[in-house]
Length: 240
Length: 123
Image 1: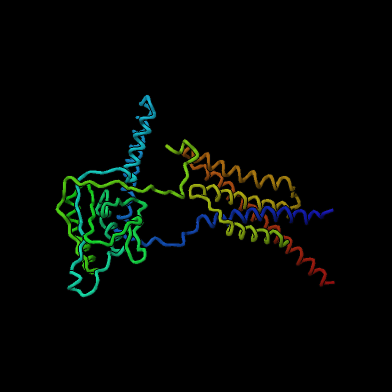
Image 2: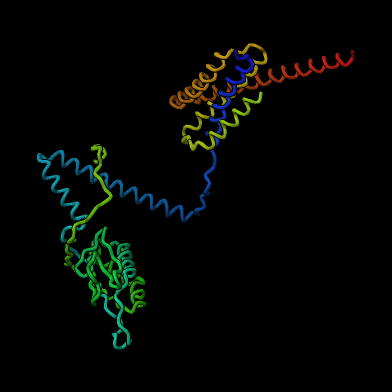
């Protein structure tokens, strides 16, 4: 037989444990975050702008999908809508030929090997990647290097001393880089105004930018895109 | 009588290390629930000191008060009236009363203890 006093203490302890648990959770919930927000006004403004831009983009996307859905519902044959979507996605992934305005960059050796007295090095993958990142930040739409389309999964790396793009060698000069943009004029002046030419000159390479051209053709990506870590969404509702 | 204190410490440690975080908008409910729980705890202790402690009343009161307080706050949010103030007020007043009673009882016990001690030493 348990004594009443011990019974009381036991019940009371269980209740106080629950109470303490509530206290602990509450304390954890209201405590200040560990990292202090030290952004100043300009940084906050920039962040706000970035978020607003993101919001606009998301809204545009929502509108696009809404429209797509409406078209799908309106269309008698869902087959056509699916085909359209497929074409659109293919174009987005870089599997179709693209025409448009843009500029052509040519990479050549800055000085002849006879003049330098040593062989000319092939273009380094880092430099090429830097160029691609840079022109992407200038709102380039499509890029091809020596006729090889640059897509999201394109690999540029050094294999046994030779720079390769998706397995194709880039060891002969000149290298021709075609870039499409909605505003070729702007792209042209941005590339000209950037430090890209200086970066190329450091590697003994000359970067020439052609005048904006109205009709540039960029070939499709020739290999198949391998996707390893993706699976279709199970829930169909979330797919829309 | 150290068991409840150990219990409360154990609870706090569990709470701190449990990685549970209540979202900001619900932390109001939890704080009012904590107030209700505190009131019930002191009420139970008072009842124990007054020898009118009933386990069922105490345990049911603990959970019922918490639920009542949280639902009052919830109702208040939806009605646009700060109903959680009602719970705050009720529990706050009762808390003070309970603590006052506990204090008196303890003082009375202490005094009577001292008196009997004096009487004993007089003999």
